[in-house]
Image (cartoon, rainbow, N blue to C red; front, top):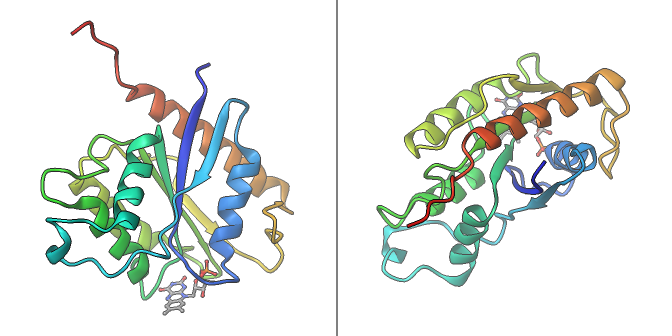
Length: 189
Ligand SMILES: Cc1cc2nc3c(=O)[nH]c(=O)nc-3n(C[C@H](O)[C@H](O)[C@H](O)COP(=O)(O)O)c2cc1C
């Protein structure tokens, strides 16, 4: 199997984020040959079209980081039945300048955790609509709805429930297969 690098974006900037813990769990459980690296969003300013002619370095780095990896997992909480504003802001930076969207053709997957019964499902549906608009192939199954219970993930991303760990391993395998399917084919031109 080819080595691959998957970027992950955490849609929460909370210092106690349970979604960050979920991201760390995915990092721990990644199969051999797959490395998960964070693509940070917390230092991005608010996007405005005023920046299109001259993106700040932090936004250039953010776009480049997305373009450099083989796939991107977005690990996000649900805020008010949608995605947190900080995540939407980051996605807007990635989408512009017009015609230079960083997610174009990029394999993506979404996952999230909350204590709620639908475990971020509403936010993930909104996110999938955005990614579809970006022309990013997105993992359909398994759906990443992870209901949190206290202590499910330790601060360093250990998973304390075997079924959840098994689910996350399967989720990463499925995403690996999606990445494989969309891998660029080398051409002699
Ligand atoms: C502004 C706000 C809105 C929220 N809305 C939702 C929601 O719609 N659905 C949900 O399941 N949890 C909601 N929550 C609770 C979050 O799931 C919970 O705070 C979770 O810990 C956030 O993820 P994080 O710890 O990774 O930041 C909301 C929390 C905040 C602060």
